Image (cartoon, rainbow, N blue to C red; front, side):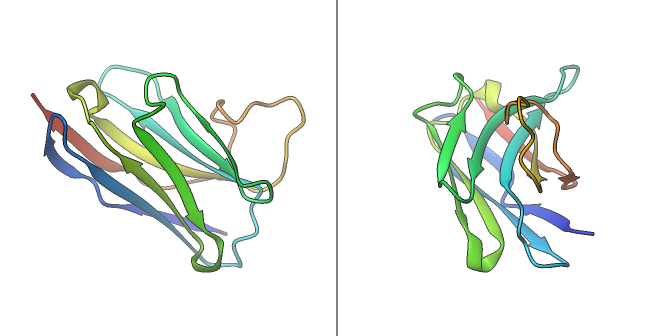
Length: 126
């Protein structure tokens, strides 16, 4: 079973930056794609960003495009989320997730992933 552990969350002022990391442990990390989702209090979990390892292609939610960057180090089994120009509305628990195999017709923006981390809190003060 692959385990995912997020880190890097914290409290930051609006306009600041944070870098989240998600490290995979356990068996060799050979997943198809990795994603970041977030969930604010009282709201549903929403897609933030995703990366397909083999193609190095990425996808972003409209709300974070141009401010957030997803990247990964396949050798280190780690995926990152660089978050710049943070806004109070970015406050949420951020989760990383792994989709181990491609799923035809299932967008990476949907929470149809095989493994999830426990989440890391990001709080942006105004």
